Every structure is written in structure tokens, then in C-alpha cells.
Image 1 (cartoon, rainbow, N blue to C red):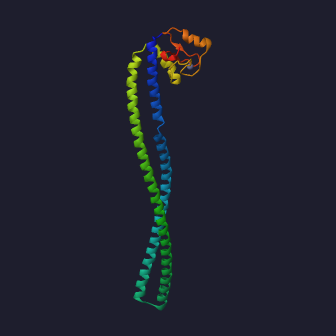
Image 2 (tube, rainbow, N blue to C red):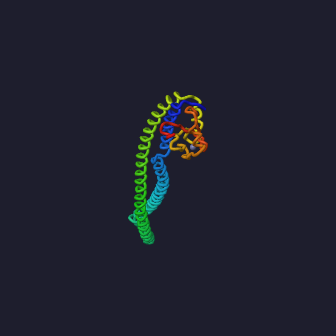
Image 3 (cartoon, rainbow, N blue to C red):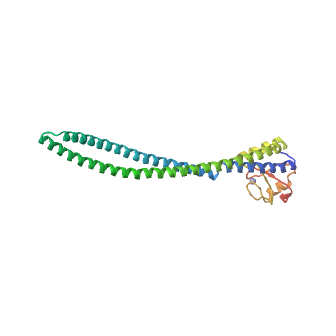
Length: 244
Ligand SMILES: [Zn+2]
């Protein structure tokens, strides 16, 4: 293939833009915020499980407490009824029976109230555990929101740079011969690098150093010959910097 030395030199400008675009695309995919957001999401998922367990513990205790309250209420109702019957008076045997039942009911009420108190203390701890988990969830959510904001800012900056680079690429490519750009794009599609400066006897793509006949092949090539590296097949652009 033939292309003017000037066109070949400008191929390096195009490669510089493409390299910058590739770096921007890589930066966009590997933003530290993305890993951070993923880590917080995993943390939140674990915390949510913890929160559900803590809520279940509180709900279970609430149910147990209200069952005790119903039982206590029943004992109180029974005691009120017995008291009314006692107040109404009656046969001695009947009164003794009621008094015995009242004593039993009092013991029962006291046992139930002690047990309920115990549960209410447990509920207080369970409630504290729940609000502690909720606090950690809130903090993680804040961290996620902050990381998402930083990610969005970084992505917006990268997008702006990508748009800028893309708009400068179009006229560069349009000014070059179509077959040269076609070859360049084909090589670049495989390794990201289509053309590189030949300098100090080295291919700028794979860094291999040329000697003897190989070096002479480059040296003796016509200025408008498009020379490619035997090793990596990239276009070796010769300029005044090449030291040939
Ligand atoms: Zn090479």
C-alpha cells in the first residue's frame, strides 16, 4: 500500500485520539465508585436480612406480650366477678370456695405479670437491636447515594471528554486516504493499536528491534510505502524522529 509520508504521520495523530478514547472507555468501566457501589449493595442486602430478623423478633415478642395481657385481663375479670359474689355474701362453704379461688387467681395474676415484665424487657433489647440495624442501613444508604453522585459526576466528565475526542477524530479520519484508514482500523480492531512510530530501529507497537536485512527493508522503503512490522503487523510510521 502507498500513502504520502504526511498522511502516514497524521495516522499517528488519529492513533493518539483512538488511544485516548480507549483509555476513557476503560476508565468509565473501572471507576472506583462502581466497585464501591457494588460493595455497599452487598452490605445493604445483608443488613436487610438482619433487619428482617430483628423485626421478626420484635413482632414475636409483641404477640407473646399481647397474649399475656389477654390472660391477665381474663384473670382480672374472673377476680372482679368473684369479688362481687363475695360482696353479695352467701353460704360459708361458698365463701370459702370463692376465697380459695381468689388466692389462686392472685398467684396466677402475679406469675403472669412477672412473665410479661420479663418479655417487655426482652422487647426493649429487641427494639434497640432493630433500631441499631436501621441506623446502619441508613448510614450505608447515605454512602451509596454519595458514591452514586460521585460516579455520575465522573461519568459526565468522561462523556464530555469522549464527545470532544470523537468530534476531533472525525475530521482527522476524513482527511486521510480511505484505504489507509481501512487498514489502520482493521489492525486496530485486533489490538487497539493500528499504527506506531518507528524509532531507534524499533517498532513502536511491539517494541521489537530490527537488525540487518529487516532494518534495511525499512530504511530502503520508499517514503510513500506503508511499512508494516513483520512481528505485530502494525503500520510502522517513519518520521524525522525515526532516526533513519
Ligand atoms: Zn511490531
